[in-house]
Length: 330
Image (cartoon, helix red, strand yellow):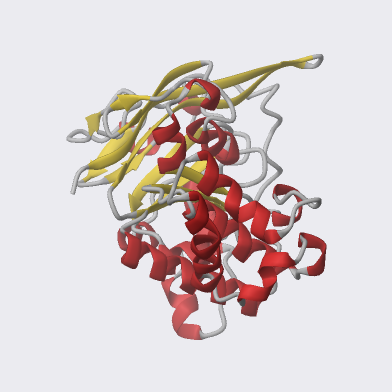
C-alpha cells in the first residue's frame, strides 16, 4: 500500500482589513491508502482550510498537494474530472451543503450524470442503490432536504460523496452537529464503507476521543501548523507536545481506569491567539506551562521523535539523536 496523498509545506494566507491571516503556515503530512488520518485542532487552527485546499475549494498560497504522485495544487475547476471524482468531501452541516430546492433523487443523480457513471436509463437505479447503502428507503428519492432530520441529511451527503466512487473522502466534522446515537451510527457506517470500498479518510475533527477509535494516525494542529503527529496508539499512550498533553488531559472519562491512562493534568491557559497576530517564536508559548526563553524567539522545526512519531517543540530539539525533518514529516 502506497501514499494516496502527500502534502508538502502547504500554506494558505488570507488578506483582510486587519492584516494577513496565516490560516495554514507550512503543513506537511501524507495519507496512505486505506488509512484514516485524524486532523485535530481547536477552532481557528486551520484544519478545515487544509481540507478545503485538498478538495480544491481553495488554492494554496504555496506548497504542494500530490494525489497518487500527481500535483493537484490548483483549484478544482482546473482539475481533471477524474480527480474531482476521486476526491470527495462531506461537510459538517448537511443542511447547508444540500440544495434545498432539489429532491434527494436529483441531488444523487447529479454527480452520476456529471461523471457519466452508468447509462442514462440506469442512473435512477444507481441512485436508489446509494440510498440503500446509507440505510435510507427508496421513497426518500422524491423528498426534499427540509423533510429530513439532521442525521438523514448527513447520510444523503455521504451517499452523494460515494456516488463518484472516490478513493479519498475528506470528512469535515461529519458528526459534530448530530446527537450521540446518530453519531455512532454514521461512524460505524463510514468504517464499514472504508473496509468494503477501500476508501482512505482524512477526518477533520476537534474530538480526540473519537479519534482513539477510528484513526490510524492522529495529527494535532495549532495556529496553522502541525505540532504533533503519531500512530494512534502511541499518540494516546505517549503524547509529547505540551499542547497535545493539555488536550488529552481535558478529555472527560467515566472510570478510574480511563483516568489513569490520561496524561498528568495540564491547566489550559488562555485562548488560541488570532492567526492575524501570531506570537513570535513558538506560537504556543503564551499558553505553554513549560515555556523556555528560546520558545519566545525561535519557531521550532518538526522533528522525528521515533518511527512515525513527529513533534514540533524545543523540549525535544535539545535532545541529540532526533532527526530534523525541516518541516516535512518524512
